[in-house]
Length: 180
Image (cartoon, rainbow, N blue to C red; front, top):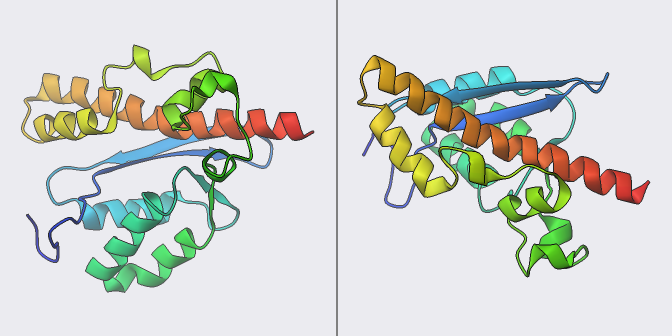
């Protein structure tokens, strides 16, 4: 739908970051753009991601890294900075997808939505937007909504995406506690 995009490219319109500082405080930030917001997405991401440290993601090869590589092809002027980000990514799904960790409460699944309920009292069920395709539909409405509805949709998208990165934080710390 936009210049430099090909069939099957995914338009990145949102991200969430939960950044654990060295003093263990947790900072949350995110981005939600409208229409062709890829360049703004890239610039804000580069600004928000800390310059050092690991970047914990879930299903890295099938999602986050893939999207950053796609953006680097579309906007080669940002390739070096995007590559610096994807090279520091660590995939939290690996202990689960490889079978190195299993809990019967996972019921044969290792999605982040399933894991957050295994490792914490949190759930996606209470969110207005609770899965990815619902977020896409919400975003499409958000791009054309009037002010009051737009604010409501923004909050729903922010909460959903924020839950993903907060869930990673919860799962990581639960695993770390088990290892200790």
